[in-house]
Image 1 (cartoon, rainbow over the protein chains, first blue to last red):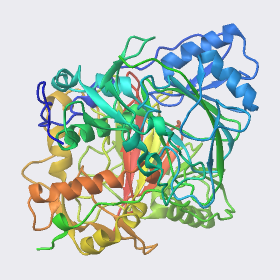
Image 2 (image 1 turned 45 degrees about the horizontal axis):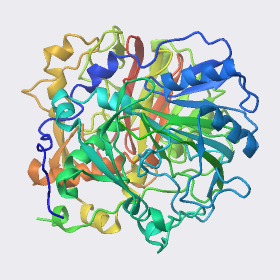
Image 3 (image 1 turned 180 degrees about the horizontal axis):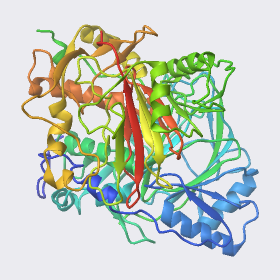
Length: 316
Length: 304
């Protein structure tokens, strides 16, 4: 495709993106200590993520929910252990966060159109979500939150890692920020889901097959590369490995060096945390300001997760 | 000239089965942390452990590549004594040793320091002719949260490379130089003027050496990828410009999430890792807090 760069050129990559990273990270605490009345919140890394205890998600009152929402804004990823949630309980909790939306790219759970069961079978080669990504960014309004519940999992392996994209943006050098602010990326369903989207299937399909409906086959959304979180007002880098490959008006080839550098930058260990699953663990994350990655280091062992997504707004 | 830089297609695989077989340990408990590598050891007192326990500990280290041993209370002498049971502690010339303990380097991060030690993916001292086999780090003080160490299994990194590329890289060496890793930070007043543990780097005595890009572990016989962006300058006989396209691909591949684990520190934890088959990364995400570690490295063999 011809390079239709009608705006200014992309910033040159003549210095490392992470040049100021250590200084920036070392001197910017990511969350303030708060006094919670109803829950306890234990951060798991300096970047993002916290374990929340003292709560039964199946019976949560408004005051407790208000604290959970505050913790969500502070920590981006919340981990709730030892829950015992029926599908209806999980949906009930997800609805406290907003409008639950069905996910049209896989068959929903029987009797629960808003839930998707993500099942890894012992013969699966690939797993679901094994790249740094944010959920469903090809939609015009991608989900705000993902609510994932672990029904069963292997004793070790299959962790999910998260990366704080406020930090990714904040630590970019000023010239790169200036060079990319206002630009948009092309997020494409056909490219994100490849053979699944064309209906050909894939030789290493997962037990939960992805199946893209016809009306989504050509779905492309242009989203800003830096978005402003509607609640915190903070800016977050919004790149998505595997969903967006080029800047609007630019070829893949022109875009790739910068896209790659931003993806590497956005997942630096300083920006991440890692969550280990147990049956009964529920994790909620905010797709507007963090990336996640599902580790495929448990081949041969079955795993079942239940997922709900909460509707979000068009990124601005 | 080998054609490996221009001829191959880069198609790594990432997913894998768990990397260790379950074992019955007699002297302590071992809890693996990921399917790739890393385990937490509990129920062991390193000051009183018998020879059988130490032998078992080394077996666990061979299986899991990095161990985090909890709940120790080690004076510097006791840490040295434990290190001697696993090999020969060697001084580390890039920093001033701990007073009275030439084998120990104290790694101290004060709340306002501008540089955090070890914040890149690397295997320790691979610009030495004989890099240390094990590194042993004891946590004297840690921030309430943050400062985890991440590790990456380099057996997996090698084994998941495209077989055609592995064939081409067989026997290829890399030039590893301390100039790559230390020149920028160690010569910067801006950085070193605000840093507690300083790195000594002498531009007139650059330490560099050729090591195989895949080394064979002397105990397991498995091959591990052995190159990283902190020390590797180029392939043998190639310019940096010629080498970087492939090196950067290898470095990116070497830290694939699926190969990694992340270990959290607590006061009194001691970690040991095997530099011959894993890399590590010190995460600097604890602004305003103090962190104090004591490090000992154990003599290793020349990589083959």
